[in-house]
Image (tube, rainbow, N blue to C red; front, side, top):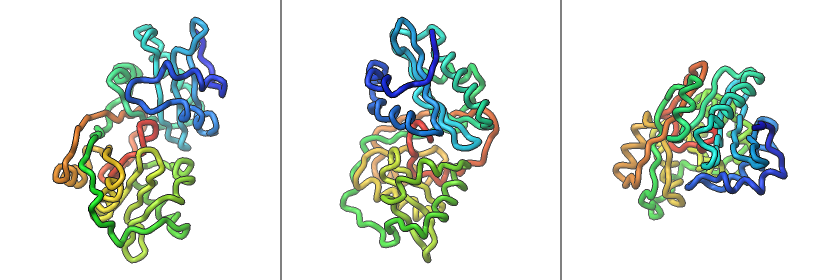
Length: 266
C-alpha cells in the first residue's frame, strides 16, 4: 500500500470510488488539485486507487473531506491510515482545530483518532417549493462596498477565515440590508448555497429566496428559527448527520447558519 498526492491524471479514474448519492467527485478533485490550500491524497494497492482523502486548510483551521475507501477494500484499516496521514499534514501546517462531516461508515474511524461530535446538522430534502413567495425588498445584489461587512459576519459565525472559498462567489451573492448594514448574505453558487444571517428576519428571508429554486436545506440543530420555519413550510425528508471536531474548541454561531456550504467545508 502506497499513499501519495492525487495527480491530474488520476482524476478520470476516480469514478469507481464514487459513493452512492454523492455528487460527481471528479470536478471536486480538480478543484482540490488546483488549490494551494488543499492536500488531496490517494491510496494505491494492487496497482489501483482504492482510497482517497483531502485536507483543506483555512489558516489555523483544517477540514477533512472526501475520505473514501473502495467497497472491495474496506475493513482493512485503509480508512484509518488515510485519516492518520491527513492528520499528519494538518500538524505540519500548524492547525489547532480540525472539522469534518461524518458519514455512518466514517464515524467509528474518526472516533478512534479522537474526534468528538460537535453538533448535528439536519438535512431537509424535498421541501415544498416557495416559488410564489415575494422576495423581500431588503435583499439586494452584492456590491464591493459590502465586502468587509460580509466577510466579518462570516468570520464571526464560522470562527474561520474562509476567504479563499467565498471570494469567487461574491459576485453572484445577495445581501440582506438594514440601513445599509449587512445582516445576512446568500451565496447561491457556493456549495449548497451558503446562507449566514445574524438576525432572524434576514435569515428567513434569504432562506425563502433559496427555496424558490431549491428543495434542499442543511441547518445545524441549534438554528431553532429555521427549524420552526421549515416545520411550518413542510420539512420534507429529514436526516441527521454529525459534525465532528478534533483539537481546540472554537466559538461557532450555529444559530446564524441557515444553509451550510457542503460536507467538505461545513
